[in-house]
Length: 302
Ligand SMILES: C[S@@+](CC[C@H](N)C(=O)[O-])C[C@H]1O[C@@H](n2cnc3c(N)ncnc32)[C@H](O)[C@@H]1O
Image (cartoon, rainbow, N blue to C red; front, side):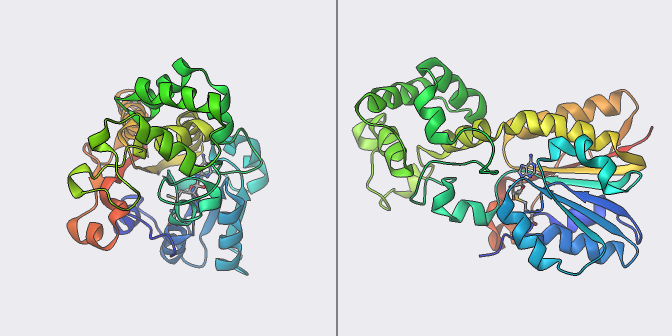
């Protein structure tokens, strides 16, 4: 199913989009936000869309085929500076970063993003760059794995999970989603282990949830990409231009909150609202992925 853009009305309103605006969407995904942005900026607007996933670029090539206002860039948004001169724009009126994974990435077992699918543990958003999750699991030490699960997943059983992974990989490599799920289940006390599809509602959070999040962040170097990407995006905003960031977990949201407050304190930017915008009940009912989304927006003042 096509990815549903989250907090769409909030994004359109708080990025203050006007006809003729030049906008960067750093995370095209399936182009839902971009499509709505194009309607707002009208025939004289311009949209530069980035995605590091070639499949997202291919989807958007179909979607925006023949639209002269759209330029698609297969790049990590952290590399904006490298490609900026080729974009032939002076600066942006607005930038949107909707970080995390798309529904298409999560649903495709071959990509290895979700513990609910079956396939190889890859998790690279750009399959041409970096190590797969299975390679990280094979190469990192027990301490490094525990740190990764703790810092990027806020997983309190990080040491126990790291220990069972290291024990298991001595017997056989952990290459598939199923291999990792089985190893993690082994780290749980027997009364917390359940067969696939038989997890009761009181044990709702699957033990693999935070480990998968941490691995994905590690494989794609997502936190550093976010820090570099938002800094370079802010630099390339016009005066009074706006940067909006949607994040999906507290590790990312903290980074955005701290950097936005710093710009606000330095009088380089104005926070548009202090508390992040979150989805309302009807959006969450219609799109459960919106449950954890948080939108923060800053306006550049100098
Ligand atoms: C949540 S989805 C975006 C969905 C999109 N807003 C829509 O309406 O369909 C996130 C997308 O951003 C891409 N992405 C994540 N981090 C990125 C980065 N550092 N650089 C470029 N693309 C990135 C992912 O590949 C994915 O396609």
